Length: 303
Image (tube, rainbow, N blue to C red; front, side):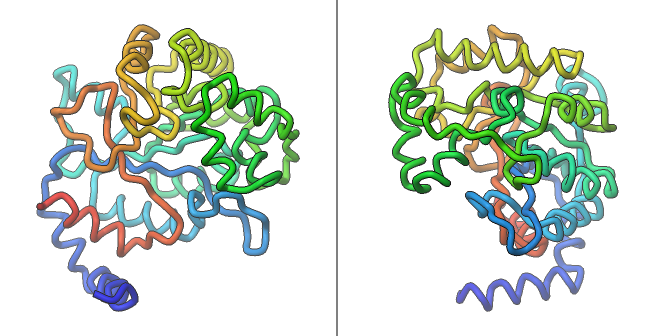
């Protein structure tokens, strides 16, 4: 079907209540773990990797859909269900945010709270601690997105050597600015927000030696726990494709360091058959409308 026609048809199905009726009778094959990154600034502002940053209107529409047709859960709800507590509801959805952009606190959180949606925020710690752009945002501004893609596949030490000259301090008004340590603390204190780990500097862990991986993960966990004042129990692998971006050795390290949940970017619902430290997620990109999300939640898993 022509994309424009398909999009129109999905909007009509959403407006007619078709997806709501369909979803309300469904039982998902697992948890729909939605993976967001950040939210976009007002039109006209510079945005690196713009496809990873949804608009506030898109996020608001997604949250409204989830609240009206699904069962948003917290990670603690999931933990309790696995521990013999109340079972998960029929259409569980867990909302997650990767990275640690300040727009999560200043833009996304008010929208999320308005709809009473629990979230897990997976935060890198070096940009927060150093008040710098994440390495890939700095490199894309100095070079290009293609250079970021080439650079991240380098061996760990070469990767660090190559991006270090591009490191730049982030202005508070920059749409790619990281959270500050105080903002991480404020975020963690908000109702229904859990802070998770995402490494110190966001390397491709598969390109690092085991001791380098341990340092990235352990240092991140230590910094976050110092800021939020409680254990950090969940983790998200940078990039997150099994085999390409992390290895079985990485999973073992995550377990040894005390995490009880870890998330990949493998596409799909997080089913009960998945290992607890390799849960699947559904990537949420700019341009995914509420109608498109409703369609995916209704039909993507049925085959």
